[in-house]
Length: 131
Image 1: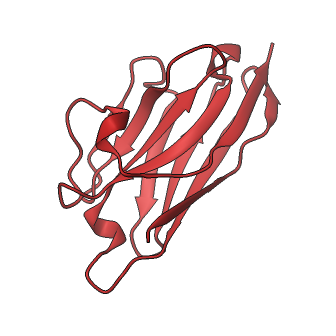
Image 2 (image 1 turned 180 degrees about the vertical axis):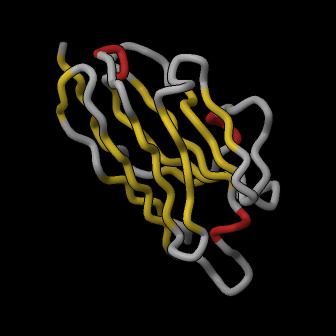
Image 3 (image 1 turned 90 degrees about the vertical axis):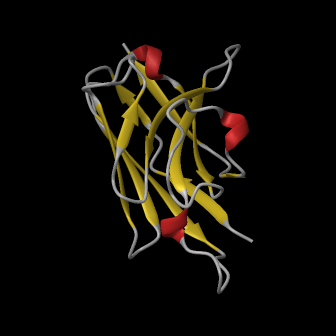
């Protein structure tokens, strides 16, 4: 059973940076980290969960308009780990950040990222940005 474990969330001041990690484990002999689209979602109190960024097995990336130019998603297929580098953080970035993986398209990500398309989720890591 594939599992995801996020880390790296902290409380920072506005303008600061954080690097979130997502460690994947539990792959069977017929599955592979490379065969999953890897994404980050976030959910702030009282708001719906929203997609932040995604990266395909080939390194193709997608970002929400709210983080484009500030956040960078990447993955290391040899270490089964994904990253979300967050720069120039703003108070509105405050949320629980979740790593998610979709294994239904051999590592390709849908053009439109919907949380219902992702089968595996981590427990989340809290990011708090103060002004």
